[in-house]
Length: 368
Image (cartoon, rainbow, N blue to C red):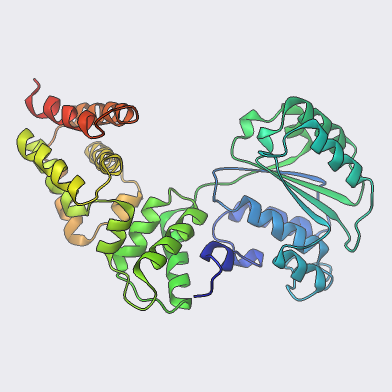
């Protein structure tokens, strides 16, 4: 593997390489083909879902020197495409609104807009975390969006579109990015590992995908950590990944929940203590328990979700999962969820980190 981190090395260079966001890609590529590109876009959605990647692809397609009419993919061979791929395109201006949120920065931007592109057809401005602009800066940007020069395209990216002022929203074409599905993330990770010629246990990619919360960038960053931790020459083992992430294996979660079912408070607390000595993170452990209990509750009321947990179970684990869920009533599961969610909140300020978890165990096992 090269020294380049995975999420940069495998960042999509064409629209066809992008995973998910089909609704966004279809609309944008049609606009490119028909030469009906807007001067203002807003890409909204969770972090790590491809907003900046698609913004760069749009910029690259618009300024590609070899793209013919009716086509939408950038060639990745002309000077313009290569400069964008290398991160040194003079007519692609990327601004982080989190650190450049003031009126002075936006005024500088407005001054720069007046000048035509140095080498390209369009001067493209990508404004990341646009919701963090100050009120004055947002109003200054609005004036530019209301009367943009013909050579300028603005792409605003945000994780919190509800914080944007309504008048900016009304001046932009808005696209909502969704979290990626677990099978999409798994397929992408498997492709990367295959190209890097790294062997792995099948459960590894499922575990990494389940920890990414629908964000491809997070999944690729986690994979980078895993490869660095385990080395490239050996086979990536599930146990090593669990150690790196501070997670308990599935059997341990099932065993702990079994103690709760049998009202064995002593055994459950001892189990927590032993897990912590094995470098299991109590906060990650309680999150995993909450996730499993949620799945139990959904199973009880006959809701079949394609959740990360269910998708990552083996056939034997699914049987254990269903059997274990059958040992509780809906009310018992609801009560446990409430106790553990309360404990998770208290752990943030607890002097003894695992104490709220231990108290929850006592209340569940010994309470009425």
